[in-house]
Length: 173
Image (tube, rainbow, N blue to C red):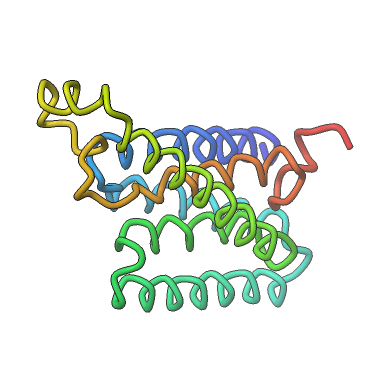
């Protein structure tokens, strides 16, 4: 039963991150329900992987701290609220041993994605496309960067790099 529940949690995590990336890319929002499902799966995964109640509590405390930092980034208009909540939900999965790598990966993916998006927005032939696709916010030079894409990419890489609480149960070392 534990193996099946672990599998369900992993599928929810990976599928939820893919959905969050697509949603943020297309609408510049990340639904609270989606983040809540990823977080609930993260709590279940952390509970199954934690050696004791203390380790589980430390992981929850870390996620709360991450959410607090995310709220500050939201308050100073660096991140959106959905980004802050998604990052906290992913930190439930990475736990104390993988959150530093998650921060670095998110920054790298976010930087690369931002540069590519800014370059694409400046290409001359896209001016015509932008006029024809005026409803596509992603192509607008006045829009920000949907950072949930970088968070989701970093979270997915964390799983396949064995930096999540349940990765060792499903991936060969």
